[in-house]
Length: 297
Length: 77
Image (cartoon, rainbow over all chains, first blue to last red; front, side, top):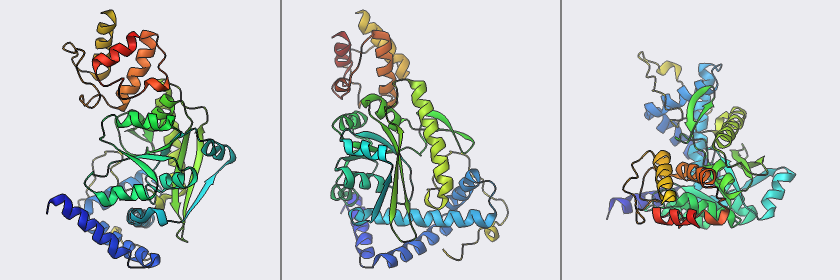
């Protein structure tokens, strides 16, 4: 059996084990696993703490730790729930003009973030319009991962696929709503994020510009009742201009909006990702006393 | 020939690569690592500016950008 087949089987086993339990129990197991992983993965933990301090410098150590662990728990649960996406309870929240765009059948470019369950926005779009497309980095050999998109009615183009970006342009022209994560590090443009100079992707804005379609922003939060609330906003109803400076400025505005959203829901964003590419500050002294696991975790 | 040379120059500036050996068969999309989404966007904008063409939705597909020849042919039309 090849390594890829073994990985595939391992993923399927984990998914099947989780599905043996009711959802509240899955959540408790996932939360427990998240704590163990974060406590064992020192670099991941320290990066999350460092990033939370970048985003919210006025928080106390206790608050920083709380958000670090709670956000990691939310993300872990979201990753696990991705494997049965089509069963997840979703509430879609959008204003009238955004709903008009979604109902139009003309397609749009949607910029989203890594919050709660990563693909929940694509799923919400699929349920509402039946025309949802996204780009994924899931290894082609991971059939278990690829299958979930098909079952959820989401068209998925692999990031490494030849001409993948142009296929996204074609998809929008055919009336698809293309959702791209836009909060990760990329070399497309320079921007400022939580006061730090960094770089980011322009994919969502470029798609809007090339396809001459609206640009939307969407994000999802997991409520305490276990429902995913998907918020969709119109960022540019007429689409982005085909001008590099306008595209870059648009992405900066998108990131300004991302900041506000993250600050409203800090327990939902993926803080442990190496977003700013800053060197990891490893404490010299024993810092475990300041990294207490929140008791409600 | 002027279009060919201008296109080579444009590709060289956009992708920061040597295009002096480019010919009709030279593969672009999927063959050159620098030919990513940002490069495509920049190319389209610059082609519209420099060649006075209007690149509409239908033109933006993989076939147009497949090779140097297909791209040059598109601009010449």
